[in-house]
Length: 365
Ligand code: BGC
Image 1 (cartoon, rainbow, N blue to C red):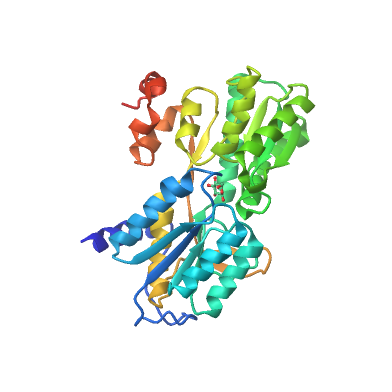
Image 2: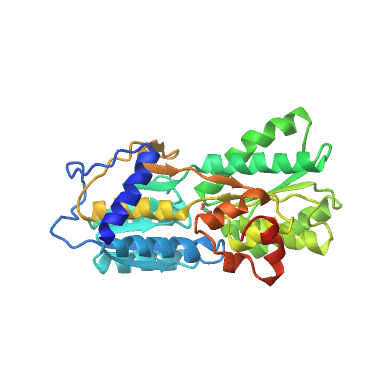
C-alpha cells in the first residue's frame, strides 16, 4: 500500500518533469546486484546554512524510504569535510548499496564518489552537482531559474518602491557550491543588463564561505559601511543570508526600506516576507526532490538504471549527467499561503503570536 503511494506520487512527478520512468538493468555499471537487499546512505551537508537539510530533506527522504520499505541511513557532515569522508567510508563499509551525497565542495565530493564506485556502490548527487564527479544521477531544481526568479523578484520590489538608479549589493552563496554559481548566473542574467545600461548600479559583492549566516552578516555590515549606507537592494542567495542582511538593516533602521531576496521558503524567510523586511523567496518543493532521488536510489540499489529523460553537462569533465531538474516557484507576500497549502511549512510554525495578524492579512487561516 505504502509502496503504491510512493510510486504513484513519484511517477506523477517524473511525468510532469518530462521524464519517462522505466526500469532497465542493462545500463548498470555497478555490482549492486539484485540479490543484495537495498540499503541507501545519504550524507547531508550541514544544519546551519539552511534549515532545509534537517527540517525538510531529512524528513521527506526518510518518509520516501519508509514508504518503499527500504533501509536507509541519513547522516549530516556538519560542514566538516573530514567528517564527510569518514561518514562515507563508514556507510560503504557498512554495506550501503547506493550512496546519495550533498557535497561540501567538489574535491571531497569527487573523492567520495570515486571511492564508492571502486567498491561497487552506485551514487547520486543530491541537490549539488559534484564537478568532475562520477555520480550516476544528479537530482535538483533548475538552479539558474532559481537565480533568475531572485533577480526578477528584486527588480519587482525595487520598481514597487520607485527607487531610481538603485545600488544593488550581492551576497552570493558558498564559492565551493556549484549551485551558488548557477544562482548567480541566473540573477546576473536579469540584473547585469540593468547595470550595463545604467538603470541600476552594481554595489559591493561577496561570496559567503560555506553559506555561513554569521559571516554573511559581518560581510554585509562591511558593505553598508563601505558605501556609507547607500545600498538600495540586496540580492541574498538564500533565506539565511537574507536574514543576515536584514539583521544588519534592522540595526540601521533600514529594514523594510531596502528589499532583500532569499531562497528556501524557510519559516524565518516567510516571516520576514510577511513583516515586509524581505522582498521574496524561492520555494523549492523538497518533497518532490526527495521522492525523485529516493526512487532513483532504490532503483540503483537493485541494479536498475531508470531513464530521467534529461541530462546536465558537467562543466569540468564535459560528461552528460542523467538528471532530474525540478521547477522552483517565486514567492511574494501575496502567495506565502501557497507554501503553507503545499504542506511545506505549517501554519502553527509560521503564524506564531507575533505573526498571527500578518498571517491573517496574507490569507493564511
Ligand atoms: C541549496 C540551497 C541552500 C544552500 C545552503 C544550496 O546548495 O540549493 O537550497 O539554501 O545550499 O545550504
